Length: 63
Image 1 (cartoon, helix red, strand yellow):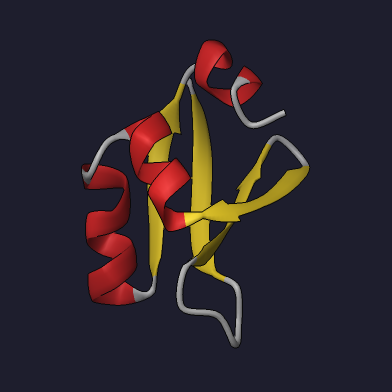
Image 2 (cartoon, rainbow, N blue to C red; image 1 turned 90 degrees about the vertical axis):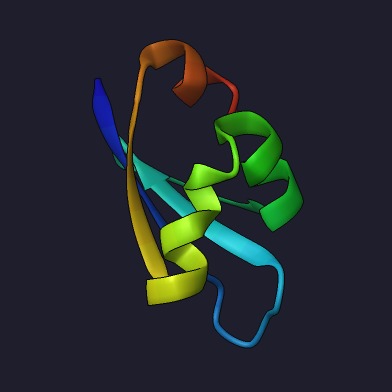
């Protein structure tokens, strides 16, 4: 398992910046929810950032 860090891209309303294993990817909040489930956005909306535990197959979906 790896830790995936999620934050909002400054100046946007729906773009999320994801960081895992030295890789940074930006995608829409809708796509993040589809890939990782609604719990992925829960802390993001409430706190502005979120940390998720993901496995290698989920990391592969980011590429």
